Length: 77
Image 1 (cartoon, rainbow, N blue to C red):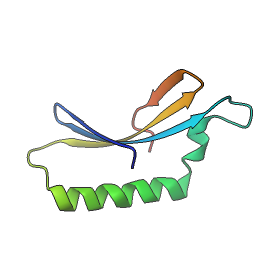
Image 2 (image 1 turned 30 degrees about the vertical axis):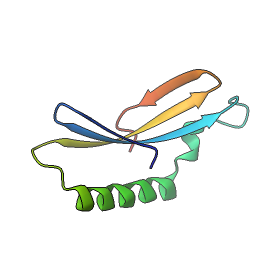
Image 3 (image 1 turned 90 degrees about the vertical axis):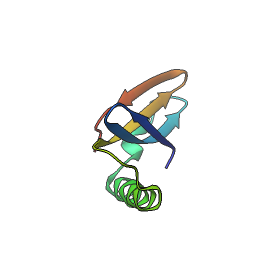
């Protein structure tokens, strides 16, 4: 788990993937089904341990970094 962020009524678990170039595909392609399952499991563990209160949306984002360009894909999975 790379980042856990909170905002008004939202809790975001964000996976960050970086590549120097997109020559072999974009970094977001590295967040396949197995990585998604791992991030979901880690989020469940975090939620069980820290037990945040209130009503909030949970979102899974991917931050794709290519060189110096950052693209955030909200609700990626």
